[in-house]
Image (cartoon, rainbow, N blue to C red):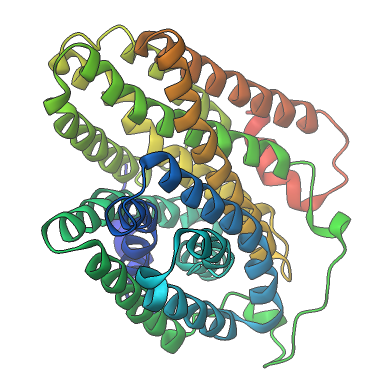
Length: 407
Protein backbone atom coordinates (compact mmCIF):
# COMPACT_ATOMS: atom_id res chain seq x y z
CA UNK A 1 0.00 0.00 0.00
CA UNK A 2 1.29 3.48 -0.90
CA UNK A 3 0.21 6.52 1.13
CA UNK A 4 2.23 8.93 -1.02
CA UNK A 5 -0.36 8.47 -3.80
CA UNK A 6 -2.59 11.07 -2.11
CA UNK A 7 0.26 13.57 -2.03
CA UNK A 8 0.84 13.08 -5.74
CA UNK A 9 -2.85 13.71 -6.46
CA UNK A 10 -3.24 16.93 -4.44
CA UNK A 11 0.13 18.28 -5.63
CA UNK A 12 -1.14 18.53 -9.19
CA UNK A 13 -1.91 22.14 -10.23
CA UNK A 14 -5.32 23.28 -9.00
CA UNK A 15 -6.39 19.91 -7.56
CA UNK A 16 -5.88 20.84 -3.90
CA UNK A 17 -8.02 23.98 -4.21
CA UNK A 18 -10.59 22.09 -6.27
CA UNK A 19 -10.96 19.43 -3.56
CA UNK A 20 -11.34 22.14 -0.88
CA UNK A 21 -14.01 24.08 -2.80
CA UNK A 22 -15.70 20.84 -3.78
CA UNK A 23 -15.77 19.79 -0.13
CA UNK A 24 -17.60 22.96 0.93
CA UNK A 25 -20.05 22.64 -1.97
CA UNK A 26 -20.78 19.04 -0.95
CA UNK A 27 -21.51 20.07 2.63
CA UNK A 28 -24.08 22.54 1.36
CA UNK A 29 -25.68 20.16 -1.16
CA UNK A 30 -26.05 17.17 1.18
CA UNK A 31 -27.71 19.42 3.76
CA UNK A 32 -30.48 20.39 1.34
CA UNK A 33 -32.90 17.48 2.06
CA UNK A 34 -32.82 17.90 5.84
CA UNK A 35 -33.02 21.71 5.69
CA UNK A 36 -35.90 21.50 3.24
CA UNK A 37 -37.58 18.91 5.47
CA UNK A 38 -37.36 21.07 8.58
CA UNK A 39 -38.39 24.15 6.61
CA UNK A 40 -41.69 22.46 5.79
CA UNK A 41 -42.20 20.96 9.27
CA UNK A 42 -41.20 23.98 11.37
CA UNK A 43 -41.66 26.88 8.97
CA UNK A 44 -44.96 25.80 7.40
CA UNK A 45 -46.20 23.68 10.32
CA UNK A 46 -46.75 20.64 8.08
CA UNK A 47 -46.16 16.96 8.79
CA UNK A 48 -43.17 14.85 7.82
CA UNK A 49 -45.23 13.22 5.07
CA UNK A 50 -45.76 16.58 3.39
CA UNK A 51 -42.06 17.34 3.83
CA UNK A 52 -41.17 13.98 2.27
CA UNK A 53 -43.20 14.87 -0.83
CA UNK A 54 -41.26 18.11 -1.29
CA UNK A 55 -37.96 16.26 -0.97
CA UNK A 56 -39.15 13.62 -3.44
CA UNK A 57 -39.96 16.36 -5.96
CA UNK A 58 -36.53 17.88 -5.40
CA UNK A 59 -34.98 14.43 -5.98
CA UNK A 60 -36.83 14.10 -9.29
CA UNK A 61 -35.40 17.45 -10.35
CA UNK A 62 -31.87 16.35 -9.39
CA UNK A 63 -32.20 13.08 -11.31
CA UNK A 64 -33.31 14.91 -14.46
CA UNK A 65 -31.04 17.91 -14.09
CA UNK A 66 -27.80 15.99 -13.48
CA UNK A 67 -27.39 14.59 -17.00
CA UNK A 68 -28.60 17.86 -18.55
CA UNK A 69 -26.06 19.88 -16.57
CA UNK A 70 -23.40 17.35 -17.53
CA UNK A 71 -24.18 17.79 -21.21
CA UNK A 72 -24.03 21.56 -20.85
CA UNK A 73 -20.61 21.29 -19.20
CA UNK A 74 -19.46 19.13 -22.11
CA UNK A 75 -20.54 21.83 -24.53
CA UNK A 76 -19.79 25.09 -22.73
CA UNK A 77 -17.55 24.28 -19.77
CA UNK A 78 -18.12 24.61 -16.02
CA UNK A 79 -18.52 28.36 -15.46
CA UNK A 80 -21.73 29.02 -17.48
CA UNK A 81 -23.46 26.02 -15.86
CA UNK A 82 -22.44 27.17 -12.39
CA UNK A 83 -23.68 30.72 -13.03
CA UNK A 84 -27.11 29.43 -14.09
CA UNK A 85 -27.18 27.07 -11.10
CA UNK A 86 -26.21 29.82 -8.65
CA UNK A 87 -28.91 32.12 -10.00
CA UNK A 88 -31.58 29.46 -9.50
CA UNK A 89 -30.32 28.51 -6.04
CA UNK A 90 -30.18 32.14 -4.90
CA UNK A 91 -33.80 32.71 -5.96
CA UNK A 92 -35.06 29.53 -4.31
CA UNK A 93 -33.30 29.86 -0.95
CA UNK A 94 -33.77 33.62 -0.84
CA UNK A 95 -37.56 33.53 -1.10
CA UNK A 96 -38.14 29.89 -0.08
CA UNK A 97 -38.99 30.65 3.57
CA UNK A 98 -41.85 32.92 2.47
CA UNK A 99 -43.37 30.46 -0.05
CA UNK A 100 -46.61 28.62 0.56
CA UNK A 101 -46.52 24.83 0.60
CA UNK A 102 -47.88 24.50 -2.93
CA UNK A 103 -45.44 27.00 -4.40
CA UNK A 104 -42.54 25.43 -2.49
CA UNK A 105 -43.42 21.99 -3.85
CA UNK A 106 -43.27 23.21 -7.44
CA UNK A 107 -40.16 25.32 -6.81
CA UNK A 108 -38.41 22.30 -5.28
CA UNK A 109 -38.37 20.64 -8.71
CA UNK A 110 -36.66 23.71 -10.17
CA UNK A 111 -34.19 23.75 -7.26
CA UNK A 112 -33.30 20.14 -8.07
CA UNK A 113 -32.99 20.82 -11.79
CA UNK A 114 -30.54 23.65 -11.06
CA UNK A 115 -28.78 21.88 -8.19
CA UNK A 116 -25.18 22.96 -7.58
CA UNK A 117 -23.13 20.32 -9.48
CA UNK A 118 -20.25 20.28 -7.00
CA UNK A 119 -19.91 16.48 -6.97
CA UNK A 120 -19.93 16.28 -10.77
CA UNK A 121 -17.43 19.12 -11.26
CA UNK A 122 -14.88 17.48 -8.96
CA UNK A 123 -15.24 14.05 -10.58
CA UNK A 124 -15.07 15.45 -14.10
CA UNK A 125 -11.91 17.38 -13.34
CA UNK A 126 -10.29 14.34 -11.71
CA UNK A 127 -11.15 12.22 -14.74
CA UNK A 128 -9.34 14.68 -17.03
CA UNK A 129 -6.41 15.76 -14.84
CA UNK A 130 -5.35 12.54 -13.12
CA UNK A 131 -3.53 9.74 -15.01
CA UNK A 132 -5.31 6.41 -15.12
CA UNK A 133 -2.85 4.69 -12.75
CA UNK A 134 -3.60 7.28 -10.01
CA UNK A 135 -7.29 7.72 -10.70
CA UNK A 136 -8.56 5.23 -8.11
CA UNK A 137 -6.57 7.14 -5.46
CA UNK A 138 -8.09 10.43 -6.62
CA UNK A 139 -11.62 9.02 -6.48
CA UNK A 140 -10.91 7.55 -3.06
CA UNK A 141 -9.97 11.05 -1.90
CA UNK A 142 -13.20 12.34 -3.43
CA UNK A 143 -15.13 9.63 -1.57
CA UNK A 144 -13.49 10.65 1.71
CA UNK A 145 -14.46 14.30 1.32
CA UNK A 146 -17.98 13.20 0.36
CA UNK A 147 -18.14 11.00 3.43
CA UNK A 148 -17.15 13.86 5.74
CA UNK A 149 -19.67 16.17 4.08
CA UNK A 150 -22.47 13.67 4.81
CA UNK A 151 -21.41 13.67 8.45
CA UNK A 152 -21.19 17.47 8.74
CA UNK A 153 -23.81 18.96 6.40
CA UNK A 154 -27.09 17.46 7.70
CA UNK A 155 -26.00 17.82 11.35
CA UNK A 156 -25.17 21.49 10.82
CA UNK A 157 -28.50 22.08 9.08
CA UNK A 158 -30.44 20.45 11.92
CA UNK A 159 -28.52 22.41 14.54
CA UNK A 160 -29.25 25.80 12.95
CA UNK A 161 -32.91 24.95 12.25
CA UNK A 162 -33.60 23.72 15.79
CA UNK A 163 -31.57 26.26 17.78
CA UNK A 164 -32.19 29.39 15.68
CA UNK A 165 -34.98 28.96 13.10
CA UNK A 166 -35.79 27.10 9.90
CA UNK A 167 -35.81 30.41 7.98
CA UNK A 168 -32.24 31.17 9.05
CA UNK A 169 -31.26 27.61 8.19
CA UNK A 170 -32.68 27.92 4.66
CA UNK A 171 -31.15 31.31 3.95
CA UNK A 172 -27.84 30.28 5.51
CA UNK A 173 -27.80 27.23 3.26
CA UNK A 174 -28.47 29.45 0.26
CA UNK A 175 -25.53 31.66 1.22
CA UNK A 176 -23.28 28.61 1.60
CA UNK A 177 -24.30 27.29 -1.82
CA UNK A 178 -23.64 30.70 -3.36
CA UNK A 179 -20.18 31.05 -1.84
CA UNK A 180 -19.09 27.50 -2.73
CA UNK A 181 -20.47 27.77 -6.24
CA UNK A 182 -18.89 31.18 -6.79
CA UNK A 183 -15.53 29.77 -5.74
CA UNK A 184 -15.84 26.92 -8.22
CA UNK A 185 -16.93 29.34 -10.96
CA UNK A 186 -13.89 31.55 -10.32
CA UNK A 187 -11.60 28.50 -10.38
CA UNK A 188 -13.36 27.33 -13.56
CA UNK A 189 -11.77 23.84 -13.61
CA UNK A 190 -11.23 22.39 -17.07
CA UNK A 191 -13.42 19.32 -17.57
CA UNK A 192 -12.57 18.65 -21.21
CA UNK A 193 -9.37 17.07 -22.50
CA UNK A 194 -6.82 19.81 -23.15
CA UNK A 195 -5.70 18.03 -26.32
CA UNK A 196 -9.20 18.33 -27.68
CA UNK A 197 -9.94 21.84 -26.47
CA UNK A 198 -10.96 24.47 -28.97
CA UNK A 199 -11.07 27.48 -26.69
CA UNK A 200 -14.64 28.56 -26.00
CA UNK A 201 -16.10 26.57 -28.88
CA UNK A 202 -18.71 24.03 -27.69
CA UNK A 203 -17.82 20.35 -27.95
CA UNK A 204 -19.43 18.58 -30.91
CA UNK A 205 -22.62 16.72 -30.08
CA UNK A 206 -22.12 12.98 -29.78
CA UNK A 207 -24.81 10.47 -30.63
CA UNK A 208 -26.19 8.25 -27.89
CA UNK A 209 -24.49 5.13 -29.25
CA UNK A 210 -21.15 6.88 -29.34
CA UNK A 211 -20.97 7.45 -25.59
CA UNK A 212 -23.41 5.03 -23.93
CA UNK A 213 -21.31 1.85 -23.98
CA UNK A 214 -22.67 -1.54 -22.81
CA UNK A 215 -19.94 -1.62 -20.14
CA UNK A 216 -21.47 1.49 -18.53
CA UNK A 217 -24.66 -0.38 -17.57
CA UNK A 218 -23.09 -2.60 -14.87
CA UNK A 219 -21.33 0.45 -13.41
CA UNK A 220 -24.67 2.22 -12.99
CA UNK A 221 -26.31 -0.93 -11.61
CA UNK A 222 -23.55 -1.43 -9.03
CA UNK A 223 -23.73 2.25 -8.05
CA UNK A 224 -27.48 2.01 -7.49
CA UNK A 225 -26.95 -1.21 -5.51
CA UNK A 226 -24.47 0.43 -3.12
CA UNK A 227 -26.56 3.53 -2.47
CA UNK A 228 -29.65 1.36 -1.99
CA UNK A 229 -27.78 -0.63 0.67
CA UNK A 230 -26.33 2.37 2.51
CA UNK A 231 -29.56 4.38 2.57
CA UNK A 232 -31.46 1.24 3.57
CA UNK A 233 -29.20 0.17 6.42
CA UNK A 234 -29.08 3.68 7.89
CA UNK A 235 -32.87 3.62 8.18
CA UNK A 236 -32.82 0.06 9.52
CA UNK A 237 -30.24 0.99 12.18
CA UNK A 238 -32.55 3.67 13.59
CA UNK A 239 -35.58 1.36 13.41
CA UNK A 240 -33.79 -1.58 14.98
CA UNK A 241 -32.47 0.42 17.92
CA UNK A 242 -35.88 2.02 18.41
CA UNK A 243 -37.52 -1.40 18.66
CA UNK A 244 -34.94 -2.54 21.22
CA UNK A 245 -35.33 0.63 23.31
CA UNK A 246 -31.86 1.94 22.46
CA UNK A 247 -32.66 4.63 19.92
CA UNK A 248 -30.53 7.15 21.84
CA UNK A 249 -27.46 5.26 20.57
CA UNK A 250 -28.45 5.57 16.91
CA UNK A 251 -26.35 8.70 16.41
CA UNK A 252 -23.24 6.99 17.77
CA UNK A 253 -23.75 3.91 15.58
CA UNK A 254 -24.17 6.06 12.48
CA UNK A 255 -21.05 8.04 13.44
CA UNK A 256 -19.09 4.78 13.71
CA UNK A 257 -20.38 3.86 10.24
CA UNK A 258 -19.15 7.19 8.90
CA UNK A 259 -15.71 6.75 10.41
CA UNK A 260 -15.42 3.21 9.07
CA UNK A 261 -16.43 4.44 5.62
CA UNK A 262 -13.74 7.13 5.76
CA UNK A 263 -11.06 4.64 6.79
CA UNK A 264 -12.18 2.23 4.07
CA UNK A 265 -11.76 4.91 1.41
CA UNK A 266 -8.36 5.88 2.83
CA UNK A 267 -7.10 2.29 2.59
CA UNK A 268 -8.67 1.74 -0.83
CA UNK A 269 -6.77 4.67 -2.27
CA UNK A 270 -3.44 3.13 -1.27
CA UNK A 271 -4.03 -0.16 -3.14
CA UNK A 272 -1.88 -0.74 -6.18
CA UNK A 273 -4.51 -2.90 -7.88
CA UNK A 274 -8.01 -2.36 -6.41
CA UNK A 275 -10.75 -5.01 -6.67
CA UNK A 276 -13.46 -4.84 -9.31
CA UNK A 277 -16.25 -2.36 -8.53
CA UNK A 278 -19.06 -4.95 -8.71
CA UNK A 279 -17.25 -7.24 -6.28
CA UNK A 280 -16.95 -4.46 -3.69
CA UNK A 281 -20.61 -3.55 -4.19
CA UNK A 282 -21.68 -7.19 -3.74
CA UNK A 283 -19.73 -7.37 -0.48
CA UNK A 284 -21.51 -4.24 0.76
CA UNK A 285 -24.85 -5.97 0.24
CA UNK A 286 -23.85 -9.33 1.72
CA UNK A 287 -22.28 -7.86 4.85
CA UNK A 288 -25.31 -5.61 5.38
CA UNK A 289 -27.40 -8.72 6.09
CA UNK A 290 -25.34 -9.40 9.23
CA UNK A 291 -26.54 -6.15 10.81
CA UNK A 292 -30.06 -7.50 11.08
CA UNK A 293 -28.96 -10.05 13.69
CA UNK A 294 -27.35 -7.44 15.94
CA UNK A 295 -30.10 -4.85 16.45
CA UNK A 296 -30.74 -5.99 20.03
CA UNK A 297 -27.51 -4.41 21.31
CA UNK A 298 -26.01 -1.18 19.99
CA UNK A 299 -22.47 -2.43 20.69
CA UNK A 300 -22.97 -5.56 18.62
CA UNK A 301 -24.58 -3.45 15.91
CA UNK A 302 -21.49 -1.21 15.79
CA UNK A 303 -19.32 -4.28 15.23
CA UNK A 304 -21.69 -5.75 12.64
CA UNK A 305 -21.70 -2.54 10.60
CA UNK A 306 -17.91 -2.16 10.43
CA UNK A 307 -17.53 -4.15 7.19
CA UNK A 308 -20.48 -2.79 5.15
CA UNK A 309 -19.64 0.77 6.19
CA UNK A 310 -15.93 0.34 5.47
CA UNK A 311 -16.72 -1.01 1.99
CA UNK A 312 -19.22 1.76 1.17
CA UNK A 313 -16.82 4.56 0.17
CA UNK A 314 -14.46 2.21 -1.74
CA UNK A 315 -17.46 1.07 -3.76
CA UNK A 316 -18.35 4.65 -4.68
CA UNK A 317 -14.72 5.41 -5.52
CA UNK A 318 -14.51 2.30 -7.72
CA UNK A 319 -17.74 2.98 -9.61
CA UNK A 320 -16.88 6.66 -10.03
CA UNK A 321 -13.50 5.77 -11.47
CA UNK A 322 -15.02 3.14 -13.76
CA UNK A 323 -17.68 5.55 -15.04
CA UNK A 324 -15.11 8.24 -15.78
CA UNK A 325 -12.91 5.73 -17.57
CA UNK A 326 -15.77 4.71 -19.85
CA UNK A 327 -16.79 8.29 -20.68
CA UNK A 328 -15.32 9.47 -24.00
CA UNK A 329 -14.05 13.01 -24.50
CA UNK A 330 -16.99 15.25 -25.38
CA UNK A 331 -19.47 13.24 -23.30
CA UNK A 332 -17.88 13.00 -19.86
CA UNK A 333 -20.33 15.47 -18.37
CA UNK A 334 -23.45 13.64 -19.46
CA UNK A 335 -22.00 10.26 -18.42
CA UNK A 336 -21.09 11.53 -14.95
CA UNK A 337 -24.49 13.22 -14.78
CA UNK A 338 -26.15 9.85 -15.36
CA UNK A 339 -23.80 8.36 -12.79
CA UNK A 340 -25.00 10.97 -10.28
CA UNK A 341 -28.60 10.11 -11.19
CA UNK A 342 -27.89 6.45 -10.35
CA UNK A 343 -26.66 7.58 -6.92
CA UNK A 344 -29.89 9.52 -6.43
CA UNK A 345 -31.97 6.55 -7.59
CA UNK A 346 -30.44 4.20 -5.03
CA UNK A 347 -30.93 6.72 -2.22
CA UNK A 348 -34.53 7.28 -3.29
CA UNK A 349 -35.29 3.54 -3.21
CA UNK A 350 -33.25 2.37 -0.24
CA UNK A 351 -34.70 4.37 2.64
CA UNK A 352 -38.42 4.02 1.70
CA UNK A 353 -38.00 0.30 0.97
CA UNK A 354 -36.28 -0.25 4.30
CA UNK A 355 -38.99 1.67 6.13
CA UNK A 356 -41.79 -0.23 4.40
CA UNK A 357 -40.24 -3.59 5.30
CA UNK A 358 -39.83 -2.50 8.92
CA UNK A 359 -43.49 -1.49 9.07
CA UNK A 360 -44.63 -4.76 7.49
CA UNK A 361 -42.21 -7.17 9.24
CA UNK A 362 -39.24 -6.03 11.35
CA UNK A 363 -35.85 -4.27 11.16
CA UNK A 364 -34.20 -7.71 10.86
CA UNK A 365 -36.02 -8.31 7.58
CA UNK A 366 -35.16 -4.79 6.43
CA UNK A 367 -31.44 -5.57 6.76
CA UNK A 368 -31.88 -8.93 5.04
CA UNK A 369 -33.97 -7.72 2.11
CA UNK A 370 -31.92 -4.57 1.55
CA UNK A 371 -28.65 -6.49 1.72
CA UNK A 372 -29.72 -9.35 -0.55
CA UNK A 373 -31.31 -6.97 -3.07
CA UNK A 374 -28.09 -4.96 -3.24
CA UNK A 375 -26.01 -8.13 -3.56
CA UNK A 376 -28.29 -9.47 -6.32
CA UNK A 377 -27.98 -6.25 -8.33
CA UNK A 378 -24.21 -6.35 -7.87
CA UNK A 379 -24.20 -9.96 -9.03
CA UNK A 380 -26.00 -8.89 -12.20
CA UNK A 381 -23.37 -6.17 -12.72
CA UNK A 382 -20.52 -8.63 -12.18
CA UNK A 383 -22.07 -11.18 -14.52
CA UNK A 384 -22.68 -8.50 -17.15
CA UNK A 385 -19.05 -7.37 -17.16
CA UNK A 386 -17.81 -10.97 -17.28
CA UNK A 387 -20.12 -11.65 -20.26
CA UNK A 388 -18.87 -8.54 -22.05
CA UNK A 389 -15.26 -9.58 -21.38
CA UNK A 390 -15.83 -12.82 -23.28
CA UNK A 391 -17.15 -10.98 -26.32
CA UNK A 392 -14.82 -9.96 -29.17
CA UNK A 393 -13.22 -6.61 -28.27
CA UNK A 394 -14.96 -4.13 -30.54
CA UNK A 395 -14.98 -1.08 -28.27
CA UNK A 396 -11.57 0.19 -27.12
CA UNK A 397 -13.07 2.30 -24.31
CA UNK A 398 -14.52 -0.78 -22.63
CA UNK A 399 -11.27 -2.75 -22.57
CA UNK A 400 -9.79 -1.69 -19.17
CA UNK A 401 -12.98 -2.33 -17.22
CA UNK A 402 -13.72 -5.60 -18.98
CA UNK A 403 -10.19 -6.81 -18.45
CA UNK A 404 -10.58 -6.20 -14.73
CA UNK A 405 -13.86 -8.11 -14.74
CA UNK A 406 -12.24 -11.07 -16.43
CA UNK A 407 -9.42 -11.03 -13.90
